Amino acid sequence: MVGLTRGLWLGILGQGALDSMAEISQSVTELVHQLGRLPGIGKKTAERLAYHILRVHVSEAIALADAIRKVRENVRYCSICFNLSEEALCGVCKSSHRDAGLLCIVEQPRDLIALEQTGVYKGMYHVLLGRIAPLDGIGPDQLTIEALVDRVRTGNFREVVMATNPNVEGDGTAMFISNQLAPFPVQLTRLARGVTSGSVLEFTNKEILSDALSGRQKF
Image (cartoon, rainbow, N blue to C red):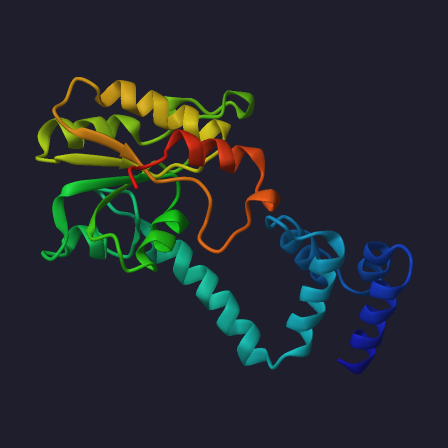
């Protein structure tokens, strides 16, 4: 292991890191390759992660591998809202303490988690599992929009909150959904946007100021 560790450091610090590691171990090279496929992980970061995995106790490395395996085997999408769950229904959909007349639409499960962490929202959710992005080849049929329309059609929602990301694709997705839900007797709203508390106007970008002016409220 000592020789392997020294070799890894030489590979990380010298030129042709992957070539050096290929000479050491094909398994290490494959690990770096797989880690490098993760979002936001470049070659150097993948190499450092590989070295870390080799350096820790074998039980830690196996625990990481087991956690990845369990996630892939046990986690699924909730059959109602498409949140992540280890059962047919997620904790939100199973709860009897949520406001069943309020529905919040988000792009990804991580957006749901962010809203839940505020402790403010007590309604239900619907996860789109993406956003409409024509340049990436993602259309409405590849999202859970049809299931959303069915929920609103058959449910008793009084308000649907658009909580897609505040960018071109997120706004386009929200606009498409609002058109799909227009025939139903529900109030369509979106998350408030604008200048955050404690900020300074001269340092605020024009998009935020534009949203703040458009969404101004009665004083």
